[in-house]
Amino acid sequence: MGFRTKQIHAGVTPDPVTGAILTPIHQATTFVQDSVDEYMAKGYSYSRGGNPTVRAFEEKLTALEGGYDTTAYGSGMAATVAVLLGLLEQGDHIVVADVVYGGTYRFVDRFMRKFGVEVDFVDASDTSRVEAAMRPTTKLVFTESPANPTLKVTDLQAVSDIAHAHGAIHVTDNTFLTPYYQRPFELGADVIVHSTTKFLDGHNATLGGAVVVKTPELQEQIAFARISAGLVMSPMVAWLTLQGVKTLSERMDRQSANAMAVAEFLQGHEKVEYVNYPGLPSHPQHELSKRQATGFGAMVCFEVKGGVEAGKKLMDSIESPWTLAENLGQVESLITHPATMTHASIPVEERVKAGITDGLVRLSVGLEDAEDLIDALDRALGKI
Image (cartoon, helix red, strand yellow):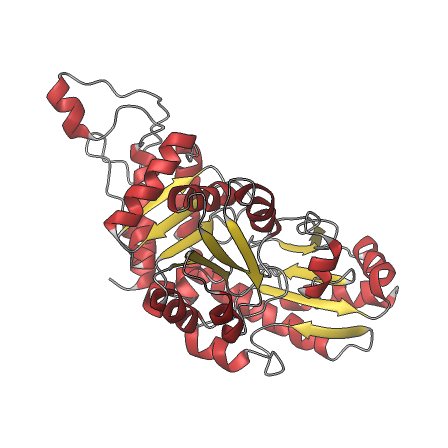
């Protein structure tokens, strides 16, 4: 099946009892068995270990990413935590991209170090730095491409090759581009992480995460971490996300086109210092983006002239259809100040070194008319 067909039909069938076209919400903790043998065969006993609604979503995402299997979680961070807890132990070393979601940075820096895991944060867009950071004890390389919020792009195939040459696993966060635009398994990755809260849901309705793996061994390790720590997705969230995924490709195409229009407008504005959007020829990894993805996504970042005060003025002046909020990937267009919102937990010196400056503005471009989005930005910039 093609991608659009799979996003609607994969993993789901009409309810065998009623014929309902939508997967039922199995809002139950407990599944009754008639015998011990049936308990072992049915696969569902307690929803922390598995739930039919959640399983339908997992099977759909497995089909879309082209993986072996998927586990779903209560949040994107829960998904990342399950990967790290499931695959690492004291004495291991990991290499992590210097620009990742702030929660990922925080958990790796404050908790994995405390558990005896050694960590190096490196600029993964420079693969020579990834190579230089590898050690005999390196167990895992964690990337995010495009990176949140600077939109730096990493060569996923090159990083996969480096990781595998050193006997390590390549884990990558595919939240920004989704399997519709980017196929990390085809670029050598071993594990794919998603915050399903973002584009897969797309409607500001759920909090969720997912991990898709390439092999049975990885599935066993990560699934064990999920059930042990209780990091599960709820049936209602799975059901809502199943509905959101059905329109993923159509939303991504429209949002990406809007993002390009907004980025081109900002690039020519006298009060904008610079714009980062992988679809712009001026983006440092524009050619790489064209090679390893089929679209550029809905995320744009830029810096206004005048630093943090100008950035705050822009935030305070922005009007509808933009909304000042932390989330991304939704049908509504959102504007965020990473230094004080999504990435506030990163030490200032590390944040600035990674390009997350005080005046950086992140846009998640939605489905509104591009002309309305541009007009509102132009009015807000005019007040600086």
